[in-house]
Length: 297
Image (cartoon, rainbow, N blue to C red):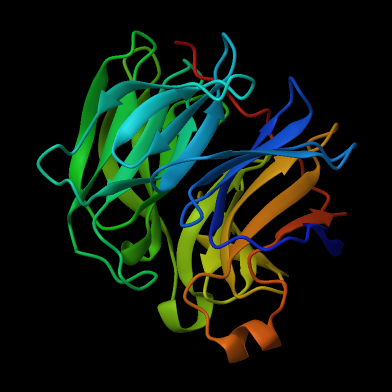
Protein backbone atom coordinates (compact mmCIF):
# COMPACT_ATOMS: atom_id res chain seq x y z
CA UNK A 1 0.00 0.00 0.00
CA UNK A 2 1.22 3.49 -0.88
CA UNK A 3 -0.24 6.89 0.03
CA UNK A 4 0.78 9.88 -2.06
CA UNK A 5 -0.36 13.43 -2.79
CA UNK A 6 -1.93 13.99 -6.21
CA UNK A 7 -3.24 17.56 -5.81
CA UNK A 8 -0.76 19.47 -3.69
CA UNK A 9 -2.34 22.93 -3.78
CA UNK A 10 -4.30 22.96 -0.51
CA UNK A 11 -7.96 23.91 -0.44
CA UNK A 12 -10.03 24.89 2.57
CA UNK A 13 -12.39 21.92 2.63
CA UNK A 14 -12.00 19.56 -0.34
CA UNK A 15 -14.89 17.08 -0.19
CA UNK A 16 -17.11 14.69 -2.09
CA UNK A 17 -14.70 13.08 -4.60
CA UNK A 18 -16.50 11.35 -7.46
CA UNK A 19 -14.72 9.44 -10.21
CA UNK A 20 -16.30 10.16 -13.60
CA UNK A 21 -15.32 7.09 -15.63
CA UNK A 22 -16.76 8.63 -18.80
CA UNK A 23 -14.12 11.35 -18.84
CA UNK A 24 -11.45 9.69 -16.68
CA UNK A 25 -11.53 12.62 -14.29
CA UNK A 26 -12.07 13.25 -10.60
CA UNK A 27 -14.85 15.62 -9.61
CA UNK A 28 -14.79 17.16 -6.15
CA UNK A 29 -15.79 20.32 -4.32
CA UNK A 30 -14.20 22.72 -1.88
CA UNK A 31 -17.03 23.53 0.51
CA UNK A 32 -15.60 26.58 2.27
CA UNK A 33 -13.60 27.59 -0.79
CA UNK A 34 -16.89 27.69 -2.78
CA UNK A 35 -15.42 25.82 -5.74
CA UNK A 36 -16.22 22.86 -7.98
CA UNK A 37 -13.17 21.07 -9.39
CA UNK A 38 -12.59 18.62 -12.25
CA UNK A 39 -9.11 17.08 -12.31
CA UNK A 40 -7.56 14.84 -14.95
CA UNK A 41 -4.89 12.55 -13.42
CA UNK A 42 -3.30 11.83 -16.81
CA UNK A 43 -2.72 15.43 -17.87
CA UNK A 44 -2.69 16.94 -14.39
CA UNK A 45 -5.08 19.63 -15.61
CA UNK A 46 -7.59 20.99 -13.08
CA UNK A 47 -10.63 22.95 -14.18
CA UNK A 48 -12.30 25.02 -11.46
CA UNK A 49 -15.65 26.80 -11.32
CA UNK A 50 -16.12 29.40 -8.58
CA UNK A 51 -19.49 29.42 -6.83
CA UNK A 52 -21.15 32.20 -4.85
CA UNK A 53 -21.98 29.94 -1.88
CA UNK A 54 -20.76 26.83 -0.09
CA UNK A 55 -21.06 23.74 -2.27
CA UNK A 56 -21.50 20.30 -0.71
CA UNK A 57 -21.55 17.80 -3.57
CA UNK A 58 -21.13 17.31 -7.31
CA UNK A 59 -22.11 14.41 -9.59
CA UNK A 60 -22.05 13.99 -13.37
CA UNK A 61 -25.25 14.50 -15.32
CA UNK A 62 -25.98 11.84 -17.93
CA UNK A 63 -27.04 14.40 -20.54
CA UNK A 64 -23.91 16.50 -19.97
CA UNK A 65 -22.36 18.72 -17.36
CA UNK A 66 -22.79 18.10 -13.65
CA UNK A 67 -25.32 18.57 -10.88
CA UNK A 68 -24.27 20.45 -7.77
CA UNK A 69 -25.84 20.69 -4.35
CA UNK A 70 -24.80 24.19 -3.29
CA UNK A 71 -26.24 26.43 -0.61
CA UNK A 72 -29.80 25.11 -0.45
CA UNK A 73 -30.13 24.65 -4.24
CA UNK A 74 -29.89 21.71 -6.59
CA UNK A 75 -28.42 23.18 -9.80
CA UNK A 76 -27.11 22.09 -13.18
CA UNK A 77 -23.61 23.32 -14.04
CA UNK A 78 -22.03 23.41 -17.47
CA UNK A 79 -18.22 23.31 -17.12
CA UNK A 80 -17.71 24.66 -20.62
CA UNK A 81 -20.01 27.70 -20.48
CA UNK A 82 -19.93 28.14 -16.67
CA UNK A 83 -23.72 28.43 -16.80
CA UNK A 84 -25.48 27.53 -13.53
CA UNK A 85 -29.19 26.69 -13.66
CA UNK A 86 -31.14 26.30 -10.42
CA UNK A 87 -33.47 23.29 -10.45
CA UNK A 88 -34.92 23.28 -6.94
CA UNK A 89 -34.49 24.94 -3.55
CA UNK A 90 -34.87 23.16 -0.20
CA UNK A 91 -34.98 24.18 3.47
CA UNK A 92 -36.63 27.48 2.60
CA UNK A 93 -37.64 27.87 6.24
CA UNK A 94 -33.96 27.55 7.26
CA UNK A 95 -32.03 30.00 5.05
CA UNK A 96 -28.76 29.48 6.97
CA UNK A 97 -28.70 25.77 6.19
CA UNK A 98 -26.54 24.35 3.41
CA UNK A 99 -26.12 21.14 1.48
CA UNK A 100 -23.37 18.75 2.50
CA UNK A 101 -22.61 15.34 0.98
CA UNK A 102 -24.51 13.72 -1.91
CA UNK A 103 -24.48 10.81 -4.33
CA UNK A 104 -26.59 9.15 -7.03
CA UNK A 105 -28.39 5.82 -6.78
CA UNK A 106 -28.65 3.22 -9.55
CA UNK A 107 -31.90 4.74 -10.83
CA UNK A 108 -30.12 8.04 -11.43
CA UNK A 109 -31.62 9.99 -8.53
CA UNK A 110 -29.36 12.48 -6.73
CA UNK A 111 -29.49 12.21 -2.95
CA UNK A 112 -28.02 15.02 -0.86
CA UNK A 113 -28.43 16.13 2.74
CA UNK A 114 -28.43 19.47 4.48
CA UNK A 115 -27.07 20.72 7.78
CA UNK A 116 -27.39 23.80 9.95
CA UNK A 117 -24.82 26.57 10.50
CA UNK A 118 -21.34 25.32 11.43
CA UNK A 119 -19.26 28.12 13.03
CA UNK A 120 -16.58 25.58 14.00
CA UNK A 121 -15.96 22.29 12.12
CA UNK A 122 -18.30 19.54 13.44
CA UNK A 123 -20.05 21.99 15.81
CA UNK A 124 -23.47 22.61 14.31
CA UNK A 125 -27.04 23.43 15.19
CA UNK A 126 -28.44 20.01 16.07
CA UNK A 127 -31.31 18.33 14.20
CA UNK A 128 -31.49 21.16 11.63
CA UNK A 129 -30.74 19.11 8.50
CA UNK A 130 -32.66 16.77 6.21
CA UNK A 131 -31.96 14.22 3.48
CA UNK A 132 -33.40 15.06 0.07
CA UNK A 133 -33.76 13.23 -3.23
CA UNK A 134 -33.71 14.97 -6.61
CA UNK A 135 -35.63 12.63 -8.92
CA UNK A 136 -34.97 12.30 -12.63
CA UNK A 137 -38.06 14.41 -13.40
CA UNK A 138 -36.43 17.21 -11.35
CA UNK A 139 -38.94 16.95 -8.49
CA UNK A 140 -37.59 16.81 -4.93
CA UNK A 141 -38.76 14.72 -2.01
CA UNK A 142 -37.62 14.78 1.61
CA UNK A 143 -36.62 11.37 2.97
CA UNK A 144 -36.36 12.47 6.61
CA UNK A 145 -35.38 15.41 8.80
CA UNK A 146 -33.66 16.00 12.16
CA UNK A 147 -30.19 15.25 10.77
CA UNK A 148 -27.15 16.88 12.36
CA UNK A 149 -24.48 16.61 9.65
CA UNK A 150 -25.91 14.67 6.72
CA UNK A 151 -22.97 12.87 5.20
CA UNK A 152 -21.76 9.71 3.44
CA UNK A 153 -23.99 7.55 1.21
CA UNK A 154 -23.51 4.13 -0.40
CA UNK A 155 -25.65 1.31 -1.77
CA UNK A 156 -25.21 -2.45 -1.86
CA UNK A 157 -24.64 -4.08 -5.25
CA UNK A 158 -28.20 -5.46 -5.30
CA UNK A 159 -29.59 -2.01 -4.40
CA UNK A 160 -31.57 -3.46 -1.49
CA UNK A 161 -29.73 -1.45 1.19
CA UNK A 162 -28.69 2.18 1.44
CA UNK A 163 -25.97 3.12 3.93
CA UNK A 164 -25.97 6.60 5.43
CA UNK A 165 -23.86 8.63 7.85
CA UNK A 166 -25.14 11.38 10.11
CA UNK A 167 -21.74 12.35 11.49
CA UNK A 168 -22.71 13.24 15.05
CA UNK A 169 -24.44 9.89 15.54
CA UNK A 170 -20.97 8.30 15.20
CA UNK A 171 -22.33 5.40 13.16
CA UNK A 172 -23.17 4.05 9.75
CA UNK A 173 -26.89 3.43 9.49
CA UNK A 174 -28.63 1.16 6.99
CA UNK A 175 -32.04 1.46 5.38
CA UNK A 176 -34.03 -1.04 3.40
CA UNK A 177 -34.04 0.57 -0.05
CA UNK A 178 -36.61 0.19 -2.81
CA UNK A 179 -34.91 1.04 -6.10
CA UNK A 180 -38.05 1.61 -8.23
CA UNK A 181 -39.49 4.19 -5.83
CA UNK A 182 -36.48 5.32 -3.78
CA UNK A 183 -38.42 4.65 -0.58
CA UNK A 184 -36.48 4.05 2.65
CA UNK A 185 -37.53 1.85 5.58
CA UNK A 186 -36.21 0.10 8.70
CA UNK A 187 -33.37 2.41 9.74
CA UNK A 188 -30.81 0.65 11.95
CA UNK A 189 -27.22 1.15 13.11
CA UNK A 190 -24.74 -1.27 11.50
CA UNK A 191 -21.30 0.20 12.38
CA UNK A 192 -20.37 2.25 15.45
CA UNK A 193 -17.40 4.57 15.99
CA UNK A 194 -15.64 5.94 19.06
CA UNK A 195 -15.24 9.72 18.81
CA UNK A 196 -12.07 9.80 20.91
CA UNK A 197 -10.14 7.15 18.97
CA UNK A 198 -11.82 6.86 15.57
CA UNK A 199 -12.78 10.48 14.91
CA UNK A 200 -15.94 11.79 13.28
CA UNK A 201 -17.35 9.69 10.41
CA UNK A 202 -17.56 11.79 7.25
CA UNK A 203 -17.83 10.73 3.59
CA UNK A 204 -17.63 7.11 2.47
CA UNK A 205 -17.68 4.71 -0.45
CA UNK A 206 -18.24 0.99 -0.96
CA UNK A 207 -16.02 -1.65 -2.60
CA UNK A 208 -16.98 -4.63 -4.75
CA UNK A 209 -16.90 -6.90 -1.69
CA UNK A 210 -19.53 -4.81 0.05
CA UNK A 211 -17.10 -3.29 2.57
CA UNK A 212 -17.35 0.41 3.39
CA UNK A 213 -14.48 2.89 3.42
CA UNK A 214 -15.19 5.76 5.81
CA UNK A 215 -13.13 8.96 6.04
CA UNK A 216 -12.70 9.85 9.72
CA UNK A 217 -12.49 13.60 10.31
CA UNK A 218 -9.98 14.57 12.98
CA UNK A 219 -7.84 11.43 13.05
CA UNK A 220 -6.27 11.37 9.58
CA UNK A 221 -7.51 7.98 8.48
CA UNK A 222 -9.91 6.04 6.31
CA UNK A 223 -11.43 3.02 8.03
CA UNK A 224 -12.51 -0.05 6.12
CA UNK A 225 -15.50 -1.56 7.92
CA UNK A 226 -17.83 -4.51 7.40
CA UNK A 227 -21.48 -3.39 7.60
CA UNK A 228 -22.61 -7.01 7.89
CA UNK A 229 -20.76 -7.59 11.15
CA UNK A 230 -19.96 -4.05 12.34
CA UNK A 231 -16.26 -4.97 12.40
CA UNK A 232 -13.48 -2.44 11.79
CA UNK A 233 -11.17 -4.21 9.33
CA UNK A 234 -8.23 -1.84 8.76
CA UNK A 235 -7.09 1.75 8.90
CA UNK A 236 -5.40 3.67 6.10
CA UNK A 237 -3.42 6.56 7.59
CA UNK A 238 -3.46 9.88 5.71
CA UNK A 239 -0.91 12.65 6.48
CA UNK A 240 -3.70 15.20 7.07
CA UNK A 241 -5.89 14.99 10.16
CA UNK A 242 -9.14 16.32 8.72
CA UNK A 243 -9.91 13.54 6.23
CA UNK A 244 -13.30 14.31 4.68
CA UNK A 245 -14.24 11.72 2.04
CA UNK A 246 -13.02 9.08 -0.39
CA UNK A 247 -13.91 7.28 -3.61
CA UNK A 248 -12.43 4.59 -5.82
CA UNK A 249 -11.22 5.72 -9.24
CA UNK A 250 -8.65 5.25 -11.93
CA UNK A 251 -8.92 3.02 -15.02
CA UNK A 252 -9.37 -0.11 -12.91
CA UNK A 253 -11.27 1.56 -10.04
CA UNK A 254 -8.57 0.34 -7.64
CA UNK A 255 -7.14 3.72 -6.59
CA UNK A 256 -8.69 5.26 -3.49
CA UNK A 257 -8.83 9.05 -3.74
CA UNK A 258 -9.04 10.81 -0.37
CA UNK A 259 -9.85 14.45 0.32
CA UNK A 260 -8.79 16.37 3.43
CA UNK A 261 -9.56 19.81 4.85
CA UNK A 262 -7.43 22.61 6.27
CA UNK A 263 -10.25 24.87 7.48
CA UNK A 264 -10.20 25.66 11.19
CA UNK A 265 -6.59 24.61 11.75
CA UNK A 266 -4.17 26.90 13.57
CA UNK A 267 -0.89 28.05 12.05
CA UNK A 268 0.95 25.56 14.26
CA UNK A 269 -1.33 22.69 13.22
CA UNK A 270 -0.78 23.59 9.57
CA UNK A 271 2.97 23.67 10.16
CA UNK A 272 2.82 20.18 11.63
CA UNK A 273 0.52 18.85 8.88
CA UNK A 274 1.39 20.93 5.79
CA UNK A 275 -0.53 18.59 3.47
CA UNK A 276 -3.84 19.49 5.08
CA UNK A 277 -6.27 20.55 2.34
CA UNK A 278 -4.67 18.35 -0.33
CA UNK A 279 -6.04 15.39 -2.27
CA UNK A 280 -4.37 11.99 -1.88
CA UNK A 281 -4.36 8.65 -3.62
CA UNK A 282 -3.94 5.24 -2.04
CA UNK A 283 -2.79 2.36 -4.23
CA UNK A 284 -2.11 -1.31 -3.54
CA UNK A 285 -5.13 -1.81 -1.30
CA UNK A 286 -6.28 -5.00 -3.00
CA UNK A 287 -9.77 -3.56 -3.22
CA UNK A 288 -11.84 -2.11 -6.08
CA UNK A 289 -14.81 0.17 -6.25
CA UNK A 290 -17.80 0.39 -8.55
CA UNK A 291 -18.32 3.08 -11.20
CA UNK A 292 -19.72 6.36 -9.93
CA UNK A 293 -23.31 6.89 -11.01
CA UNK A 294 -24.77 9.80 -13.01
CA UNK A 295 -27.89 11.84 -12.48
CA UNK A 296 -30.44 10.86 -15.15
CA UNK A 297 -32.43 14.03 -15.43
